[in-house]
Image (cartoon, rainbow, N blue to C red; front, side, top):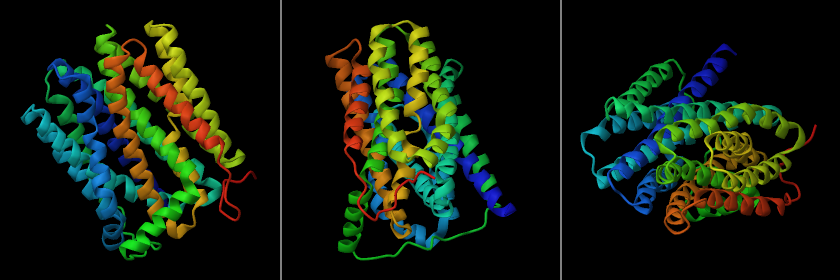
Length: 389
């Protein structure tokens, strides 16, 4: 029991580092590129490199997990991220940063795939929502603290990257004491049967996958496009360092309560309610441009939308048999990365075309579309679903 508790605590601590690095990188690079005169659409395209990395590595990580186990995969992912972060300050060229973001995307997905399969496999349905929400809280806490590092560029441009790299090294030290474990449910198969499994996963659990898509969309649009929008609307870097953590604070407050509620009331009711309230919150941000009003609305939006990924993963895990969980987590990562690619691209174009209010209409509109989609879902007879007990 003590070993299991230590393992859980370490995984939760390490995911904070991953969230910190990602939360810092998105707004930091967006601001640096904006100051260098890069257009908002190209800025958004550059941000998508991280998620292209996720797509590139996704088809190839299931077998290595089976061969090397959870711990080695997690260490590999963190090491790739830490080394890449140190290299960023060496050369400020958009194509060079694109490649580094691609590598970090690969490393980050290796890490999250291994940790998510591990946690969903060892969590029983009765406490799965709680465990995954705690995982989400730790990531969200890191993601919320990360943007504060943008202020360090006033001291030295390289300083935020160095701080994030040091945290990666500390995470590797924590992982040393975790015992090696291997997944029991991964079965290596030929290409045709692999695609058949992915098709079955999508057919059974697509509303959960929409949750991960939605989180990817909102995460990158808020952290990549909003800093550009804020600078152009005269809000400035200081406002960015307040509003982005405000969204994260909302997510932290409600992450575990929503997980517990979904354990009791079911995943679908909580997911559709969150999408509806969160989408409306972003639309209402167009009514007033004051910093206080926007801060309150960002907190409200974070309360309901900051848990989309953990809710989506948990919903997916409920709807799938255990042997399909690895494939489900791969598809969850793919859907997350697709949302993360489309988010900054659509958001960047919206800023150029619509200007005032564009980013809020983009995010709010997408959340309401997902609300409509998930509302129509009816679990297939005999499938595992979140149950009210």
